[in-house]
Length: 258
Image 1 (cartoon, rainbow, N blue to C red):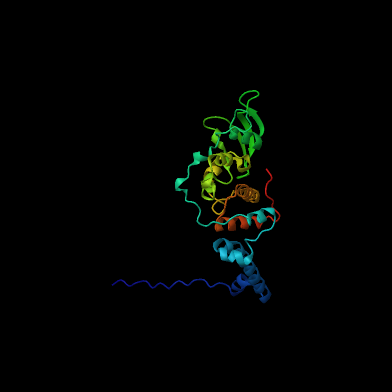
Image 2 (cartoon, rainbow, N blue to C red):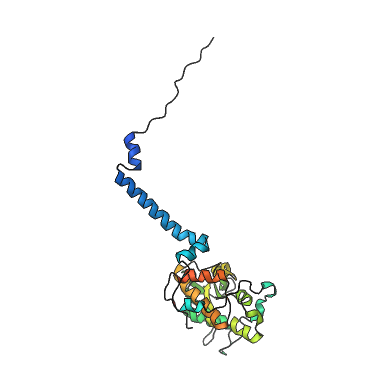
């Protein structure tokens, strides 16, 4: 018969008691300090995240309070939580790029490119069609070197700061054609921006989309408020709360003049 060789059960090495104490703190004072630091981290994390998860928490903590002209103007806007449905929305009803207000023979896209870019050149001497230019994009913070062309022009797009569909749902559905055309081509509501960022925004309002460039979020929201005030457009409760949340971080933010 073959006997089985006896194997002693392996024993896990015991951790040195001194090491165990060091991991938690070698003295009562160190343990207290560790607990204090942990509590501070937990408090800061809760202060940042909870208002975003629960609007009610944000109201209690003051995350949705703001001061300044933009905030004051926001409070004058009507709040409508069941806006006009977008089922009958027609982008063409706003006549974007179908007007020539300055009579130079070019549409508003060319005027916005000229205004918002530097080092602008034109397709011909004395012309108004932009050939090249440099854009410091407000939405991403990137520098874009624009070149006109079938495959390159979309790198810089013209954004309606208050999207046309948002305007439709918040009051423009009742306007006549002339007012819609005015809104669709109003340079106060137009910005030259990074093409992909504009496409990512779509028709979103401030509660669903903000520029990734945090330095421009306050001016962006302030301009939306200015546009809505100019045209008597409404906001939803969620939209207003999001705007207040942004303006909370920039006390005194004003409404753009132009």
